[in-house]
Length: 237
Ligand code: ADP
Ligand code: UDP
Image 1 (cartoon, rainbow, N blue to C red):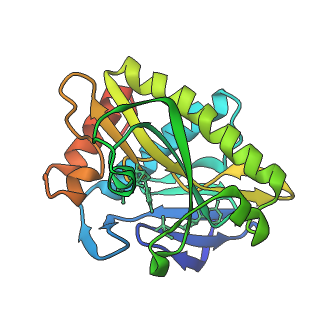
Image 2: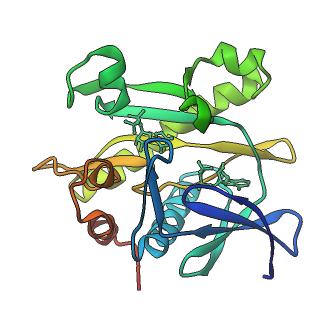
């Protein structure tokens, strides 16, 4: 697989064209960012850990019938994926209230959400990813009614699959963000599932094992990602 021109460089990954028009290469960089890119750092090994973590989770989801863009690992920090027309919304499911929902709604940090809740955000850094609803998505043409329904259903399915996967390894899946896109009219899960885009707590101590370690200057960021990977059995070396 030949890596060709760069299509896009995001805050943590770069996207490259390939010799196939339907495939892209995702390069997971060591760059880490938070607060809409205001806080940035380079973290050794993060690109490699996230690339392999993402491959493991995407394969697990495929086994459970979720259509994903993931094709194969290409190198330590690169994967081959389907080229998608991305839908510019973030789908967030929360099992426990923490982060932005606590500030927005004034609810206590750490309370269980039963049933889990769902939120859409518009992917737009200059606007700080505002929360939107499904009527906005349809009225502004970001996705069709069918796609909206499917994104909600699939995100809850992913939650069911991954919540039990993490719990078996003594971890709580607190919340996470997914992005979807289309190829030939079909919807696929795109982007990534890594500790950069979810919250994971140890089930006994509630120690944070995700990007909150970076956001809150807790240290040991990549070490925590590696701990999660090791508990799940993700092969890193
Ligand atoms: P951001 O754009 O939020 O800074 P990243 O650094 O992770 O995030 O950049 C990766 C970009 O690639 C994102 O904009 C994401 O929507 C896009 N992307 C992810 N998967 C695919 C795909 N399969 N096809 C096309 N674009 C993708
Ligand atoms: N998230 C993400 N990218 C974003 C916004 C949120 O991956 O641009 C993830 C975040 O890591 C968390 C979940 O979505 O797992 C919910 O994030 P929240 O709305 O609480 O925002 P935050 O507190 O991170 O600003």
